[in-house]
Amino acid sequence: MKTILLTGFSPFEGESINPTIRVIREIDKMNFPKIKVVTRELPVVWGKAFDALENYIHEIQPDSILALGQAGGRVAITPERVAINVDSFRIPDNEGNQPVNELVNKNGAVGYWSTLPIQKMVDRMTHSNIPSLISNTAGTFVCNHIFYRLMEFLEKEGNIRTGGFMHIPYLPEQVIQKPGQPSMSLAMIVQGIAECIEVMR
Ligand code: PCA
Image (tube, rainbow, N blue to C red; front, side, top):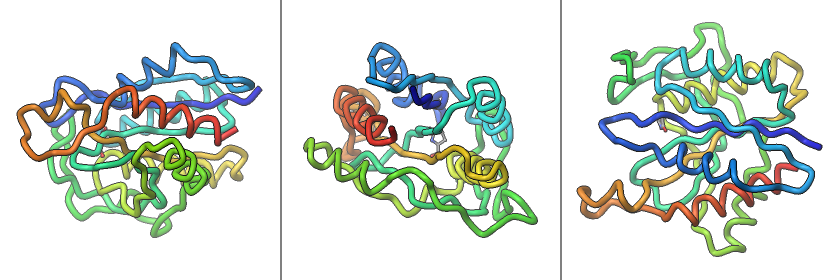
């Protein structure tokens, strides 16, 4: 039995929902052969997001970690390739922090690769006709920050676990007041994430 920690984020930027929370609640209802999926919610707050994630890793001792974030404007489910050593927030986080052109870690590496099978994930979703693409930037907001700190943490541990980050599009109900913005149905995102979990085994 393999344990996967799957995380979502609270709503931010004035949204009343974050699709990642809807997705993890649906995944909670599903069964995966030989995989135990444990889900948790993280705050959209610089620093506190990773503190929470680190505590959950110690508590749950997962074999693998997949963190999900909302990326409004994306047309596909996008496993992230690389986390970069940059904190530069376009908007304040949920506690008003807004670092600009700072480093995640002054003494840290420039970046870290995801250690998840991102191409396999995209191939599997594509095969199921779910729009998906590898993304080469997780941005420079809270998602990139926790992705960077997660990969740094996992490397310091000796890469005994794998981990990575994936962005998902808006849900249809989020774009009703945003003409021209892409979205994806909850059912399709959930199917995509379930298939990604299966290739993580
Ligand atoms: N997306 C934001 C932070 C929380 C979320 O769901 C991001 O892409 O940084």
